[in-house]
Every structure is written in structure tokens, then in C-alpha cells.
Image (tube, rainbow, N blue to C red):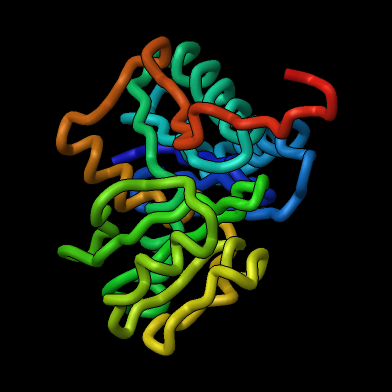
Length: 228
């Protein structure tokens, strides 16, 4: 299976390439520089493995949730590359990618993902390792930290990943949740098994059909004094 994976949904920017029997990746934390860094990183991995876009089976991207701008950058990059090479696209949850990393590097069974969503909220989801893959339990949500904490009551020997844990004191992990401080952002490297599984299940889209997943579809703005 040959595939390119990319993600710009958070402060991190990452790409990964599976080409024949080789796999390489790049990962950088570079806030507000994604549009400048993502294409050079793609060029780097393709050049290093002497790969060809036309020889890929699909291109995968971090579909969100995350920064609105970051998710749009990844979506636009995916569409440009996939359209040019006439390749199918696979969208992978950024929360699932972090859960997958915890499963692979910490042998986690249950993972609670929390990304700082700003505006006093977190993108939050619970994943469980099933056959080695991060499987969503329930739904991805955007919640106030105190409401997310309520969902931890039944946690047993779980891991917490993402920036949300440090960003909000109200998001208080129970003694049964071990916050993995080495997993703050999604990394395209860990999207590979998830994307491959989705591709094998036929869950692909054309580049024109690709849509980002914001989770927070409606942004509530504080009213200005004197305004209705």
C-alpha cells in the first residue's frame, strides 16, 4: 500500500509517506507557519523515497477537529494533490490519530483525547483499542472542561492525550487517567493504520467531496455592550 498522509489541524504540522517497503515522516511544531511548511515537507518525503504521486493508492489527511484555519489548510492541500494525481482521499480524525499514538507507544487500552478548542472549551473524545486500532466510543464533542471531566468517572487505567489537559485546570483527570505529556498534537505518522483500514473498507472520497470536520459547527460570539 502506497500512501501520503498529512496534518495541519493544530500547532503541529506533519507528513508521512508509505512507499513500497519504506516509511518516513516529518513532524514540526510551527504555529501559524503551516501554509509555508506543509508543501516543502511533502516534497522532502517524496524526494527522499523517490516516490511518485501517480503511484500512490490514496492520500490521507487530518480532517479535524482542530484549528479552523489549520483544518482548511490540510483540506486544501489534500484537494490540490489528489486532484492533480487523480487519487482518492481518506479523512482521519485528528483525535483518533492521537489515540492511536497512545495505543502504539504506551500500549493504552482506553484513551481520552482533549484538544484546547479555545473559547473555554475542548474537543473531547474517548477511544478504545480494538484489534490494535483506535475505535471511537460515543462521539467527538466540543465541551466545557468541567463537562468533559464528568465523562471520566468510569475511566479505568486510561490515558489522556492532547493540549486540553494542561490548558484548563477544570479538566481534572481521575487517578485512573494517566496524562501522556508526550502526546500533545496529532502526528501524521500514526494516521497510517487508521487510514489504511478506512481505505480497505472503501471509505474514500473524491477530492471534490472532501469536507473538513470542525465539530464546533456554530461559533457563539460574546455580545458587545449595547449590541443586540
